[in-house]
Length: 608
Image (tube, rainbow, N blue to C red):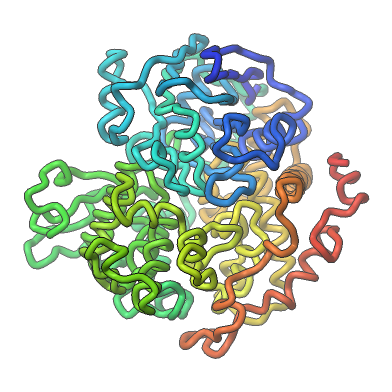
């Protein structure tokens, strides 16, 4: 079966690791990863729990295609109540860790309670134990991975860990695996830190056995060949996600200087061409691309910083290669803060990996602080002498390190922009939904994405819906609610499968996903069933949020996006037309006018 049919329950308070059978009725209903872990979380915690309480749980989950030969079958998710948002949090990551956990024989790990002192979880196939991590506490991700591998004398161990930001309570700390892949959003690393769990180290040799081996190999092979010949896949392989910088930069959808503008004059200094062009010292930012477990796309960027750059000069520990800029990182650490220095943005990205922070929320929080500084709400007295001016690359690099370490004004940046702006009396300057910072698309220029931000269960997110083609084709709102709703549902199913969402942009169809899951899981899976499963997952997440205290009031956008017209670009003069789209969206979802799933909707989906 695609499922291993068991989970590992780790009670950190008691120090126990116990194997349990996977609830297969739930697995058949919610598929895996995002869906199945949300079901377990909903059943096992009170949604009103404080995210940092020992009563909150953190679930590390794989999908039925994780660890298989299915192309991109290495995804895993961290599911919890988010420290940044107070809403359902599901943060998805790639790298090698997910495949290793699945090959060790586990579908998921449920982490509950709080360890009395720092520990890490070591898993070797069926064996699991908690090991003292006092000597690792306070150390960065880049330090502890080799330290744990040295202890166990195994270079093939795969590790997911938190850095100092997750220890001190930065609200958007993430879980880093394989040194530069991340379960990045909503503060899942903050929850892990609150449990005094430093890392999870896994070595797996059990393997994964699809239910119908021959059918699975055929379906996986067909999907792989489709990806191989797809133009979208070729772009990802050659350039990663960074070409989107040119698309939004010319269209007028690139959020700039805390969304004051939608065009960034320096975007060409951060794009794919800039990454490949030698600078005045003959140094080139991009080295090569990289791929996750079983991936035939290879969108990852491996980069290094010019040793002469101010951020790393006389700091040889940063002269090595590591995960480089992707589009969202380049936006958040570039356009959002008005910085067009490629190496400075790369350095801030390195710091996010080293100390375990979400770069989107870091950049959004610094951008909000820069606007507060520009307006005189905060001064050098609060910042410790740092001039937080838009475009100040040195301030960006300095604050990134301070936030990662929890030093000085970095502690305030670590609150996230919502709490930061509330603290200084200007909540309207936080570009967030449900407390989570915007991704790299302006909701005035891209009306469908604005609706997607507002309705996303985990807060503002570019990966929960797929209105891109529709948005770039027209700023008219007709049809956007339908595109957003339908793509949200199917993406929920993909996120639960163990495959990467980028396969959807690289040629795979609903039938490709369904045929692989059908063969791996023993039959009965069709494209229609996947769509319904995704819709069920979306509504379950909504139920969690409603029970946690969120409401229709949280399905909104910042005042700037709703009331201040885009100053330039394709949407010049437009605001986000959310009030026009939201009622239609609720109707399509089978929800009431105040955003609650109707009884007949829940009954149809088996959620009543």
